[in-house]
Each structure stands twice: as structure tokens, then as C-alpha cells.
Amino acid sequence: MRAKIHSLSLYLSWVVAMVAVGGSLFFSEIMGYEPCKLCWLQRICMYPLIYLLGRASYLNDRKIIGYALPLSILGGCISLYHYMEQKVPGFADIMPCTSGIPCSGDYINWLGFITIPFLALIAFILITVFLLLGRSRGAETEEA
Image (cartoon, rainbow, N blue to C red; front, side):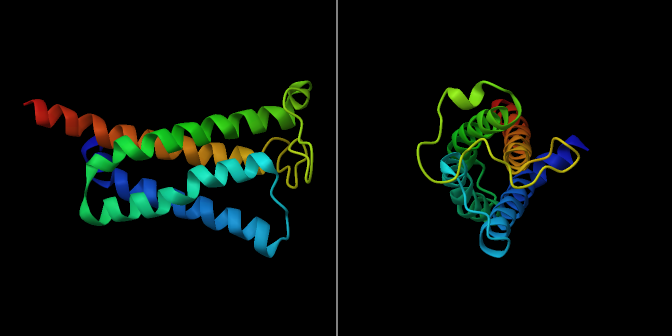
């Protein structure tokens, strides 16, 4: 099973990135939800991953993992902070949004905990895990 995930890791990461960007565009363009500052920062980290991971999965180029991981980890950190700002009282005071849509507001709140930053966090975590799984076995085979 791990060998199968390793061989598909770039492709799975790319699919997760496409779903995340599709969801982002759905919420902003179709549902009309205006992104806040932190949403834009998460988009800056997610949108390039479509191109990087798509090309890498097509060419099976595992060298891209070293370039895609920082974007995924940084985006995950921003998503985690954004989610904490929405759900933990006091976090909104650390870096309040000064203009536009407040970062502490949530357009969706499914089941009491699923918000847009939570969905982005799950996507970044999945991408990071898939990339790490794709990298680990490749490093072991190169050493042998």
C-alpha cells in the first residue's frame, strides 16, 4: 500500500491542490464570498501548487517536492492561524484585519467546526503528507 501511495504521491497532491483551488474559486466567484487578507495569503501558497505538482506528476519529477513542500507547509501554518483566529477567542486581536472582510468572520460553519480555513488546512496537510510519503521512499532507494 505504501509503495502504491509513493508512486501516486505527486498525482494525489496535484488532485488535492486542484480540488482546493476549485473550492476556493467556487466560494469566491459563484457564492460571492469575498476573501480576507489571510485567505489571499493561503491562495498565494495553494495556486502555484497546481502548476508545479501537475507538471511534476506528468513528468514523474520528484525533485519538485523540495520546492512544493515549503509552499504547502507555509500555507498550512497560515490556515491554522486563520482557523484559530476564527475559533479561539483572543486570536483575532493578535493581527486584526484593518480593512475589508474581517479574518475572524466565517462564511460557512458546517457541523460547528468546518470553515473555509479548516478546509484549506486539511488540503495543505494532505498535500504535505503525500509529498513527504513521495519523498521518503525515493531517498531510501537512492541510498541503496
